Image (cartoon, rainbow, N blue to C red):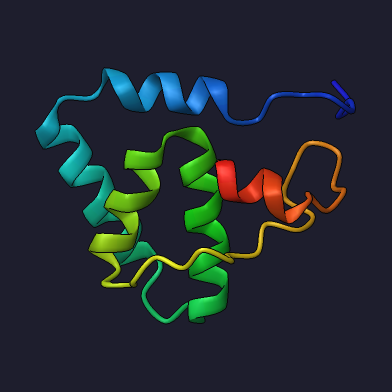
Length: 94
């Protein structure tokens, strides 16, 4: 099925994440961090911003596992369903 504008790419992943128990979440964070070894910090931060859109605890857990301090201006340009940049005020509320 082709990609359509307006698709919600985050709700289903967030709902699944919230079903995980603490041990499952810990393993998820560790597995993602291990898989991202050697990836530039800029890319890690963009991915954390996507996880945060699914659930703030998801993004925070991955950031902690990667030992990255959260930043308020992580770049998510081009990562939404439409590929259009979001306004700064929209990202700040996510």
